[in-house]
Image (cartoon, rainbow over the protein chains, first blue to last red):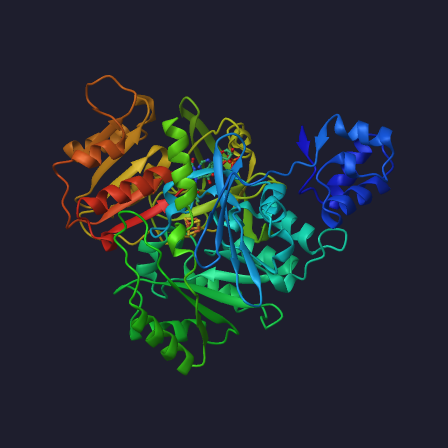
Length: 342
Length: 221
Ligand SMILES: Cc1cc2nc3c(=O)[nH]c(=O)nc-3n(C[C@H](O)[C@H](O)[C@H](O)COP(=O)(O)OP(=O)(O)OC[C@H]3O[C@@H](n4cnc5c(N)ncnc54)[C@H](O)[C@@H]3O)c2cc1C
Ligand code: SF4
């Protein structure tokens, strides 16, 4: 059975054409799935019974409930989804007073091998289809409360560009979920060709995992630096215009004694000069046997203040879900290990 | 230069595309721009297929570029690449990447085709005093082993996961590194290959006392 959820309007049109159904059926199916949140073909009552039967012979809506949820004392929830028969992905629901953000995964595992990342240790298991990305939103109980989506969970979204772009098309189209692009952020470690396509083809926000402005240090934290040096990424970004409507932000995990000195502030200011952007400082959530440690809070505040004094809008991300394996990839690694033991 | 998927390329003609082991090939075409050993380039055969990246395996002073690649069973690109004949067109980008900065007495750790950038460094005379540790599943997949044996002798270590004991260490690269008595924490380590190999080897090196600043990795993502 093939899932319809996550198909774009043009894909739905191809499907209905192939089944010999009138082409407006595609709009009806999109309307049922993305506006009325139908969970089965049977619910699509403005399709004739015969046409529903034709579809149901090969297709299902294809939503999947989470396998497990862990809830933090601070209200953050981590959802674990089974993808295929043996892969796991995580989504994190983060409620705040004025908004609720969902952090979604784009791949199960990841190929990029960042030193600080638990998902990297799983290796790569597969790309998520657009439907599997959107299912993380659609199938959690808080679905209607989510105000913002960030593609910052497991995987490198731009290593799965095609499916990520399809999911964005569905999220932001009138025939889809009708979300404003300003509520969506995709985060990347800096795959330059995909960044260009994303900027040209969408108007969603962009976040870049920066973590240090120095070539040598970034290379040791993120092997991608050998392929796409951050200086080249920034040079590319300087060709485009960013503003509050389309925000450019840099993620910066604070590692004790490694990337948290005034020397780093100075180089960051130099590197980002001329870009309208903000920096988001993040405490490092420890992963087992890591040589890295988070910077003390005092130094994080100092770092923020130094950057702010230099005119770079800098925030510190609140640490959420510390008591429920906050580091992305921990929950799914545990689930994989449990499955392996069975 | 034209672009596909935001990458500039020129058309080159294949000089040779030679099978060297089951499913493994060396592809050659003319060198049109200079490169630094350790760099990669993007190859393509049609604008409909996304570019794929390949490390250059030849030396900086060679007239031809050599690419060492394996055909993936369900690979969109390599299944077609392996069919190319001399004279066929190939889309080739400019060389790029920074896996090029070498410190003296390097230890190169590679799995499979991950040996390619290290071959380029060795053939360019840039890796004096190198140790090469190469992992493969079968003896056929120790690419360039003749040259490596001749030039490195005992400093060329082959880890074969599915071999009978003989001239190889029987086991994976990671098994070898775990128990390697010659491991020197003061040398620079360069890793190249799949994510799994790189991440696991890096963790083992760190656990054995190698500083993270001495580990440089290229991942074939
Ligand atoms: C900088 C760099 C240098 C490279 N150099 C070389 C080289 O010298 N020689 C060489 O042979 N290859 C090299 N590669 C890999 C190469 O770019 C292609 O990914 C590879 O040849 C497969 O291409 P394909 O189109 O045939 O397979 P694809 O169609 O892309 O993939 C085939 C299957 O494998 C899966 N897959 C793809 N990548 C991974 C992964 N990393 N882990 C697990 N599963 C995966 C896919 O999901 C798919 O199911 C390099 C990659 C990079 C980034
Ligand atoms: S940080 Fe992101 S890109 Fe890096 S390994 Fe983890 S999931 Fe992949």
